[in-house]
Image (tube, rainbow, N blue to C red; front, side, top):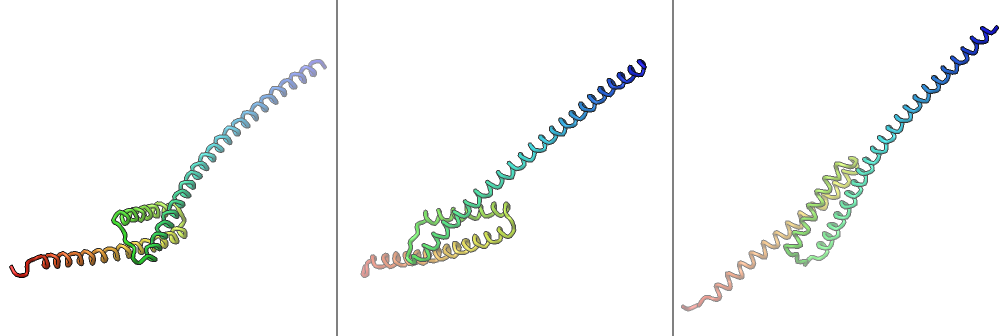
Length: 166
């Protein structure tokens, strides 16, 4: 019986070794899985940070677009309400830059927004640009008329300053 007992003790030692090996293998697999999960989580956080930065940039762009649009709307309303408003060249230049900035912001924003939002914003900006072009046409015609009038006055003053009977 001793031999059988020894065999049992050998087999239990062998079982202990295989159990320890199995446990070690399982722990290694768990560790590898944990490492993979950490790497995947890092990728998810990185992609989220990229998307959040893009969203923040889009929001800043949208805010800037809305501010410029509002400024131009208010100014155009003020000009329309003041029929006798005299505009300097500097003011026209400043507002022209504002219009150009608005058009540029609108193009940038169109690339970063949905089609429905893009159509609505594009329609609003197009309306403002039409008003601006109409205002420029009116200003140009008024300045041409004023220039023509100045030329006539100059001719009359030259004519009147000449001696009638030389």
